[in-house]
Image 1: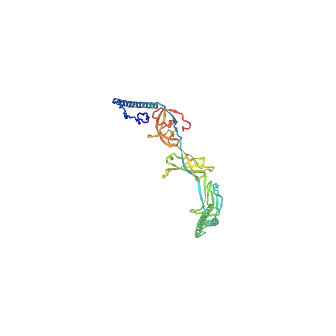
Image 2 (image 1 turned 120 degrees about the vertical axis):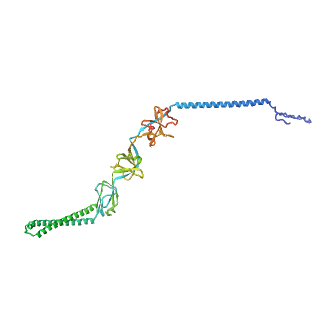
Image 3 (image 1 turned 180 degrees about the vertical axis):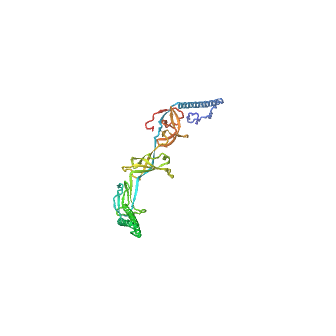
Length: 432
């Protein structure tokens, strides 16, 4: 038997030889349709529920908006009425001098290149590179045999000229005696006028001969002095106390004493005082003057500074570099500072206008430029500042604050003009 989807009927067993019973046709069951009034009521209930949910959501949203608005107002009032705690640091007046450091180079106080003034061979050489010498010490001696021969010859000629002068002087004396004896005789007529004329002219000739002989002697003496001076040039001496830094000759070397092509023999440097040359830029040059203190440092001698003072300035800036040539004298008694090295110079330049030092953490940059916040009577005030120099952890300002002002370190971003603040002590080291 077949069963519908809504009911299951039991299966009946047929007996043998029994006719199958006649079955009634099954009736299809149809669902009963609800009444029309019941459907409309359900839809109204559904719409009412949706309306209630919507009104609840709107009410909840309004309540949340009101709650947030209340919280914002409370937060604003709390921020307005709160007194933040800030770190401050005092503004310090800068030192009377400002330190600037520039590259420089050292030179010996005096350096002389010694050339040969006489021509000859090196007979003796008494110094070498690195030797210390004193003024007038003999550095080398030249062998000048030709010059020695000339000196000997001119000395003999001088002796001859001196003898000739003595002879002329004797003749003059004889002529004077003769004229003194003949003059009364000529006047009394015992001697002829001719004799008197001869005596007078002889006296004049002998006097002229003496003048010529004396001039010859003087000329020969000057020539001999020149030769002896040239002979002295064969003795090469140190011009001042110093150190031999170059030697270009040795024993047996031929040197020329020509003024244009003379042989370069030695170089001597005076190192007890070292000159330091530094070019100061225009923005710092107007405070540089003789007497300004300086400290020279060499990278290879990091543990020592060499003090000195500005001794000379060029008084005119170089047009190409806009720098002022400045010279500093450094005492060097122990010869620790060599000439010709690279160094740095720290100049202590006096300040022409006062300036103030402010911690870098107090500087605020915004659309108004560079500013700082200062605390005045427990209230924050903003000040516009002009920065002159930046030292990293601190800056030098020339306007905007005054000495002993308390500036706020790392001010809050929401800090406003006139806001009350409370100062708290900064950790050590943060105030610098």
